[in-house]
Image 1 (cartoon, one colour):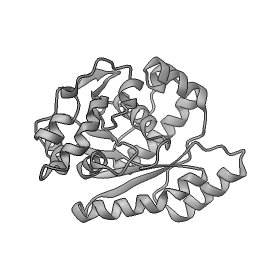
Image 2 (tube, one colour):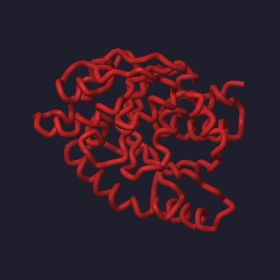
Image 3 (cartoon, one colour):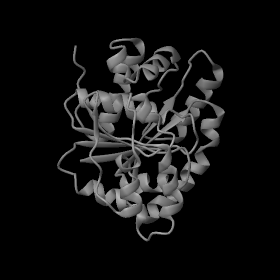
Length: 255
């Protein structure tokens, strides 16, 4: 089982889309995929059409009480540990519990034979839940918007990685992913050139094509289920190949 946290402490980088859509693609390719929503905003949960979540279905009991993973929801061929706004309470409660930050890693170890891949959607912060997700991971995938804000976020990211590696020296960045790329804009091309010069390994840029992303989100379905073979889906398939290669997993596009 490989465990990957998709992380950027800056919001609006494309984390949730990567978890949902790449997770779906790899599940469709035959892998047993578990998604974990660590963000109290619960975007991943909502974007998969999941409603009526209780706190005990989230990672709250794991982080605060040291419990086993709750039973996941099954949706679109994926297993999902959903989130709920009440998960935000865990931030403060974890700080008073020794070892709370590694409890998710321990809980995932107990289900290591049940899944081939775990993808964790980290909150856009440097708080306790983000640490929980980082320390549970073998690798991180880092989306970086091809905007100035993407470059501005890099010092904070590098500082966070350095702190995480003090606890997990074997934690690596499997892939940086340029997101929201518009080749028509000189600014985007310049930022992409900077990313190519300084970051490795770097995925192919994911173009900014908003309509299908927004419509699939409104329908609570991955792009591959909502608009198969659309230009956006082809972008996701290309990214999924990059992710699979970075993780040493198989991924073949079916007709």
